[in-house]
Image (cartoon, rainbow, N blue to C red):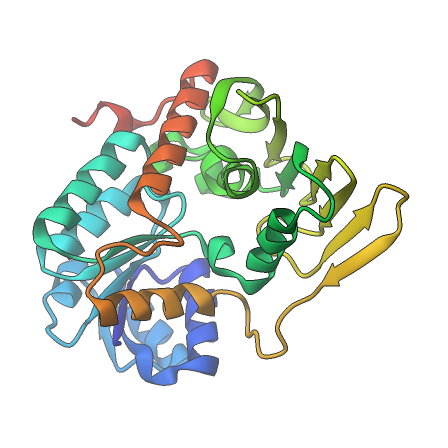
Length: 325
């Protein structure tokens, strides 16, 4: 599987470092709007080809799959470009700016019979799969209350402040909290309430989100670009489960109702960064001719994009992408 990356920023760097350590033969091409930046990135990370044009790269027949690593505002444009040129696509989270863009990409992928997946790396991590096994075992009873926070001081980062780049905390950080709730609380949602503090170009900087489920469960989520926190807690009938970071967990601890630690889950010894598991999934999908992967199906991506649209509507946060169609 030869990978071509659109974008040469921080995420592309992290992805490339992981692949270089695990499967250097996958590193084929990188494209940036500036040829000099692409060349420097390629040389630094061991890519075979560098392009100063995204279209040039997606026209390269040697590229098997395109990884979109540009700002949220451009995910739709760049993923669509790759799909229209017959390429399979992995697109960074949040998948698009809104559900309408997500739906169009999914429809195009299905029409063309091409693999398309959101790069929500957390869903592919073995540590999260083991957490799900523990919950399903019933050892601590059914989950009743989930708390998830992902906060990272980022208001100094220009794209976080800009509406035209789909800034704010929700698409960058909140998507992880929503994913955590989706993985362990299900989707039988009765209603969602929220509060927000805005900043920058009238984008969300800090928010709280409360999801009430029809069976009485509640998920309380917090995301912020103004402070630091990343913990998750699942309170169950006979105990609780704690996660050190909902986006990039390093440990999970399971306690019974007395507070006694009954299991601690750590990382696999051979894990590089955690990013590698989404590429293993993509490789599996391509080998089987799938257009989506069961761990990150299109329906899940669309479901969470719709929730984020709902939240932004509640907050009065809009992006230029919302009025493009």
